[in-house]
Image (cartoon, rainbow, N blue to C red; front, side, top):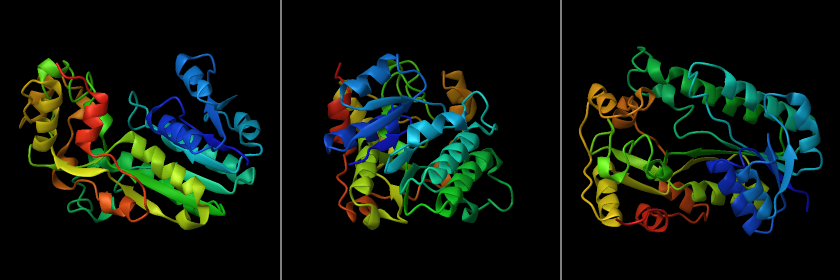
Amino acid sequence: MSPVLVTGATGKQGGATARALLAAGTDVRALVRDPGTERAGAIQALGAELVTGDLYDPASLGPALKGVRGVFSVQLPDLTDLDGDSEWVQARNLIDAARDAGVAQFVHASVSGAGQHRSAPGWAEGRWKSMEHYLETKTAIQDRVREAGFAHWTLLKPGFFMENFLPPSFLLPHGVGGGLVTTIKPDTELSLVAVADIGAAAAAAFADPPRFDGVELELASERRTMAGVAEVLSRVHGVEITAPDMTSAEAVAAGAPAFTVRHEWTNEIGHPARPEFARALGIPLTSFADWADAHLTAG
């Protein structure tokens, strides 16, 4: 069978998708900018075909798309220019190139709540300006996928990554010993998602294009409060970790990058992703406790 082109194959979501597809016996063509990197080599070692291309360079995408039956699409904002258009440009180039190449199926990874955000309390009044560019960009990309004319398309809209709790991260800037540093409130319920479950959802879509055609999956593996997250982290690491109640200024002073502390949206609006949506489609999910046991080391 013709391969699936996976973008972002050396990253979290694309890598999980490539691994899930390969495990299911699906041929994978991984789009990489530099096939000589260790991460690219790791995907190739699993059985993926590497093809060199750049989402900023539309001319490089035609050869990469030749003969593929589907595309997994993921782009991320440029963290050095959060108000820039890099995410939109990359997505537009890929969507248009896939359409022009006659690709039958397009599966795009967006984010939970994109497109529904305009109905959030305070949105019309301009309260959420800090979220506007991020969510409007995601929504514009979703619209372009819907309107491109693919025979089958799917939007995956994952919630809050469990992988954000891998130390060191923006939530654990000083490692486990430094504890959680976040403005997410202890009682805020998070729509947690394991990256592997995003890969499983994408693989399910490519295995049954008609069933997943037009599906916009608000994807979560489990709902858990930040206090509940801290309980699991404490057990796995063998040290007491608490969920703090910090202001943005306190979080930055404690070592959190400034762009990570704007969690008023998470605390007040949250993500609409729910585990039952994926379960209804038969997608296997990973609990946070199981994820932590598999990925974190005690001590």
